[in-house]
Image (cartoon, rainbow, N blue to C red; front, top):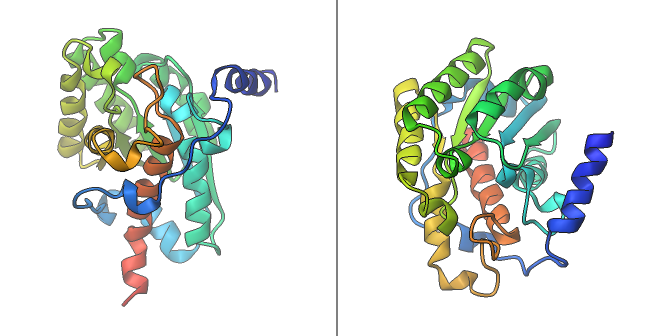
Length: 250
């Protein structure tokens, strides 16, 4: 309870005073979408198809926690839950936000037993890499720990979806930052784990004039703002829903 109250206080102090104007969902969808292979997320696809309860744990750092959002309900995990519930009204869907600002891969792995395994999720969305680049965690160690974490989750029968860092000046300005993005893509390919390439998506958003009145990043040049979190939730919900909605259309 104390931690929950503290998190709300942090939001009250650090979040913008008022929400920005929301961008349309269509604005978020840039380029050709990359569908998820249901064979890589079998537990998630089966639960959605059968209308069974689905538990998702979103673990990561401040951009999972929702730093920069005008309200906790505008974090991407909260918006993802709302969107999935609309698309699957007969399913009981829970998305647990386990983002902690400042965490790198070492501290996230240390939280796995308490914050991930204890929830017994069907799917883990693992956002990492940003603080590792900024804190100069050796990229080879980062890649080794990433593979170790994925294997641990899969050993427990949990689906895994990796999320790369956001495109942001403070991240891209870190020495060797793209090596962490490449390590996530490479590990995903090697282990058959899908990668939500937020880096490429947010790079497209950053140069899109349709975001002029509602920038996807906050003024600090690192964290996502309301429109950025909104678009992450839009694309994630699209891709997860597409695991089974194509069957319904037949």
